[in-house]
Image 1 (cartoon, rainbow, N blue to C red):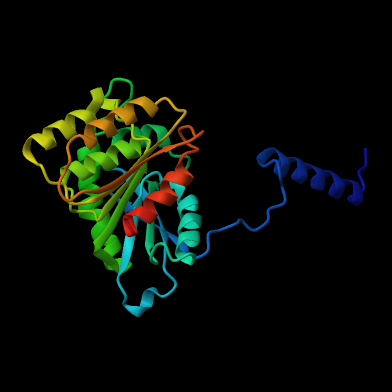
Image 2 (cartoon, helix red, strand yellow):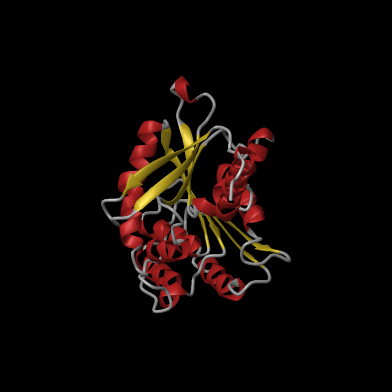
Length: 279
């Protein structure tokens, strides 16, 4: 059977079209949306042995030689976009200064965020979380590798470092505060997983209080009013409140009608305002 050139071309085009459809639901690609003024830098940690991406919001006048506050944001894969928007609004309204935002996340194709953050953000092992307990290694990576890199490359102000995290990231942020309170200027903590690692945050705070009556830093801590961590976090706040630490500036929020993920916009917004203008 003879096939015309037109028929052969039609068949080839159809085959190509089908292959494109099989690879991607939408064969026609348009330019992706990107976040203006941001870039990705990659590091391999000597401490954890893992590969990380840093999503970095770069101030528009970086080359001026000016020093900038730096917000170190855990779970950058989820919250970097959110913080870029929150910063834009608060800076426009003159609540906070221009700053560098560093969203910390993981490199590679389709990284298992749940597994990786379960290792890095937990200071103590928990049998419910595979590989947990690498918090000390991750803290060394943060302090000894990420922070020096950012302060050198992006004119970071060493006196205005802020650490922010939610859930396991919130547990890690509290852990970092008690380990070295003055390394960061302030801490924003959302819905911290205080019960993970056999109530690790409660135990660490108790041990800290036995040796220290002063905690000269800034802390904003919040939780959703309708989530599984609401009562444990309230209990932690009440215990913490009873200590009357000298030098501590802090504020709390129980976010009305919010659950575990939906509380972030309000806690992060109000947390940054408080850190830079505590009243």
